[in-house]
Image 1 (cartoon, helix red, strand yellow):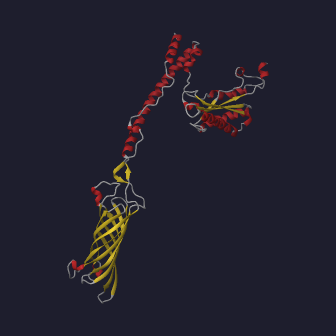
Image 2 (tube, helix red, strand yellow):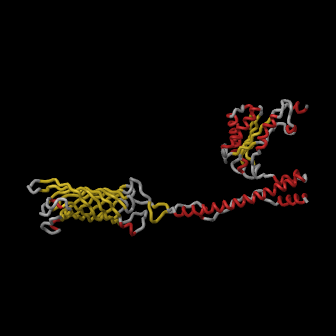
Image 3 (cartoon, one colour):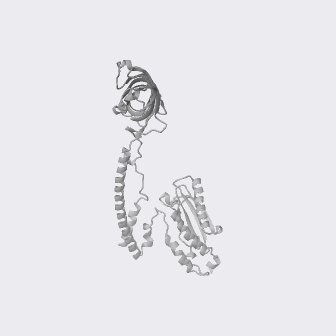
Length: 442
């Protein structure tokens, strides 16, 4: 019955593929690299050197104070001039500093000089009715409010002497512009400022009441890049991240199920192996339990090497050496990164420490064989790479005290000993003993 079981295992084993791994196409867009998409409602904040503007304007202004005095609105109209420098921090919010001045007529219709320096906060309401665009919009409408200092000249005191009048002022208005090109724009502004009633020398002190209204047209220039770049839309990345978290959890559940099934299968194989061993059929069918698909280290040979060497005296030769007189231990593999003479894991160096100690303590020689996987790289490249991997192990052993003359290295070039290409990127180290053949023949 056991023989029939083994034969059925043999028959089914022949039908198994050597490697069931294959590359599958992925159509799920959440598993693909996303191309950045731009938002339609948000833009990136510009650099400090971008979105500056400068302009000059000329027009007319009219002073309306308390007391109102004689004359109508047009009797009080005089020419005005202003200049400004500002920056847009977003498409909607900006700020500027400005200077305004020339002449005005007071409540007595006497011409007087004034200057106003102020800073304003601006808000472009035109963007409330359109989406941000990387192309330049034609129109802007920006109400503003601010504060500054107004200086009046030729102000007469009640005794007839001239006063220099410097007062706090509130500024307000609306600034509009039409973009002729990316660099230049035409501007128009309706605004004014309010200050205390005694600004023109007539009126009560400490009470607001003197006002200057102005209407002006001008030209301006954009300094730096005036365009706004759209911000990258984060929503697709957030959605992909949520999907990947859920997907990874599902994969973990699948992997756990496979691990559980693997444990069950392994226990079944172990029981079958015991049965074959009891029936004396393990030598015949033991190959069914070999795993050619993965390269791995058998550390039992290395761990038992010390005890075997300690049991030897200087005149005895282990029985195992009669058929293989040189090699003392099962080779220890050191695996390397693809295309490099660098270990995949630095923790592998611990094995070199142990190998060096044993070789030095028992005066053994070291055999190093470097290899590369034939699935990647050219024949010449793999030959060179395998030599570099051999030299790497030799240098590490030399650092640990193993003399150079006790090491021998060879290059295996590109190989395909294991199904998984990564397991062919190794250097394997064996310890051996030079034995006098006359002692073997005695």
